[in-house]
Image (cartoon, rainbow, N blue to C red; front, side, top):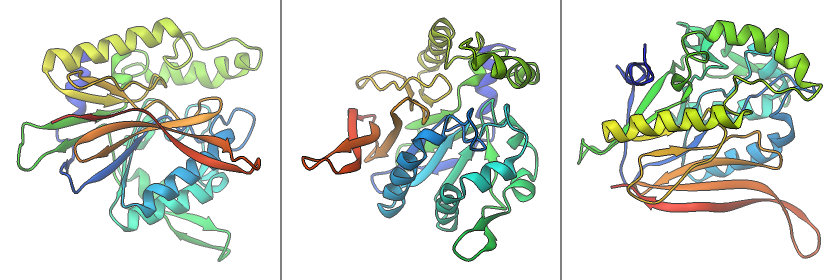
Length: 292
């Protein structure tokens, strides 16, 4: 099966959300939330993510995660991830209660595509304030693709997916890749040897992956937003392919905001005031780009 076929399959029966000047969405990808150990790449940026998530919740955004939210190749237990990052999942539960939480799966959390996964693994979280389990998002469905469509102009559509479909090893043969990551590359990474199959860590793989994703978007004349490569991409109007970046950059996290049918690439990082007081800063990297 080709890259084009795998991408087309991702959008068969994909949920459709409204796209209008009234709708606000924020797109994150590749958080890779772990279990709090040395290989938990999300850990160093969890305070940035929590601050950003709180901002988007308070300002009426719907949260869309484009896959690889949880690191389930290196770790086996979703329950442990929820326990370690219970503050983040508490905020997720608030989005969920407002019907503003949408989750896609990527290659590193592809097991979420299993039926009733959320009911079994994401039913509750332990609240430190009440010292009791609280509801999380037991009825949430994880999808491979998602569409944002304008009601007034149904031809105006944004296609959302993770982007691993551009790689045979990360899509069709993902169990093999997971085996190598879990038992080979993770231990070797501690010695500075990077996984050569990873689009996030290998520049050549990154380039090839993005080229395939962009080519599909151009060939089909569609607007495609993905994650997977960890490299944020937002060019001017008239382009077809965009990327949210990731939440595991060395000193920042990136995301794409959708408001008034336009895209804005945003970075969240630590900054300092004149009196040396630290705060979490939101910085526009590119945009807004009007799509329609």
